[in-house]
Length: 321
Ligand code: FES
Image 1: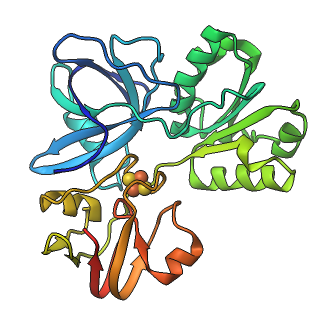
Image 2: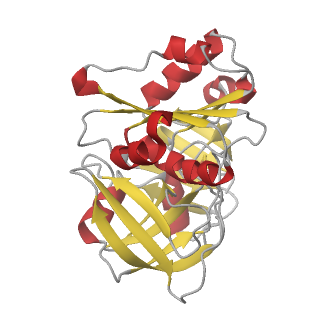
């Protein structure tokens, strides 16, 4: 049995093709009741049975947190991924039953901020949609800088611009437009908090630039869920449960532990929250850590592993599970 946020049985109420790569899904409770209240920036884990393979992927909630009639997520199709987004795009249709986790927020707005400065790249726009809905209702001060490859791929940009005018600034790669980050970060009033969600390169660029300009770490917030990488199969000994498992090429170590019926905690399933951190009791080989959580020292020492995103190559890996 897996240990995560409590589950909600839902029905797919609507599927909308937003653009060539993104579909939006609306979920309502199967029992007709209200969804739990969440805060802007929260995500849910969607539990899918992909023709016998269990897939559990995290997606940010993009709907208004005040709307408890349903939740909405947007999913970017990843043709080279392990299959979760492809399953949602190809097989999930209105009327289908699914199970999702209760919302968990690893990317909340900081209530101390006098202004919220948001930087989004591509599908990284989704957590900001729910945050902006909440801020608009409360009269919170925000500014969104949204970068996308083309106008067609800039999901929800027209709606955001229509609703929020000059609080939203769009940058299109194919038009040669780019955020003047130094200028943007240098021109902010005291008490501004910075939020970034998007591709890894963008998050690193924004965080490094903020640090170099003297922004306090506590005022800089980022979210990136890593997709578990594919790789060669490997074997792992689970010392506490006395089982030996094989992790398949397109399976994460966490999924293999769950498939063996062993309890494994998680929240993000993307190497960001720390919840799945597991002690390594023996390692004769190389761990590919892939996470944002462990320190460089922990990674080099191979004393800990994050089963949601890490893989292994070598002779023996023994975990405290
Ligand atoms: S579940 Fe969040 S880091 Fe693994």
